[in-house]
Length: 171
Image (tube, rainbow, N blue to C red):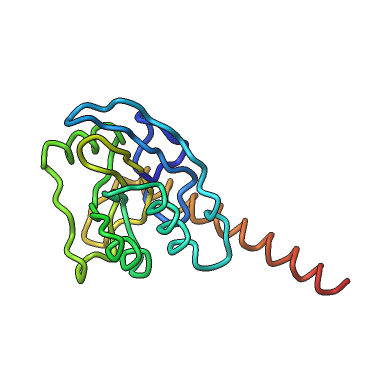
């Protein structure tokens, strides 16, 4: 699942491609067995981060993706790999339990520009990825602030990379 800091106690990130971490959760039936946190090495990329993050998640063996938002390109990558895309928000552990209890339903491929989290049903792995919410979803002011701060951080990182590249080109 896409997360900010990672772990079962973290909140679902509001962005997928630029989430800071993926929390991989091993489940057995409806029981959570283990959680592993992996950094999202693509979060600060200049472009194509959603696609790269999606490919990374697929390589980890995820079968379900849960996040606040999925862009159309990453949705296509995940769908083509057979990964279910779920739109959700909240505490990672609570969201996983809701999914395992069939309280969350996957989006159909043509309708899924947005979603939240990644995982495999049964014995397997889960990943959590943060994404922006659909305009129809209600979020608190604090959640919106958090989302905007994440976007600022990503933009600042992109700006630094661009400045660095300009300096390299000038040398």
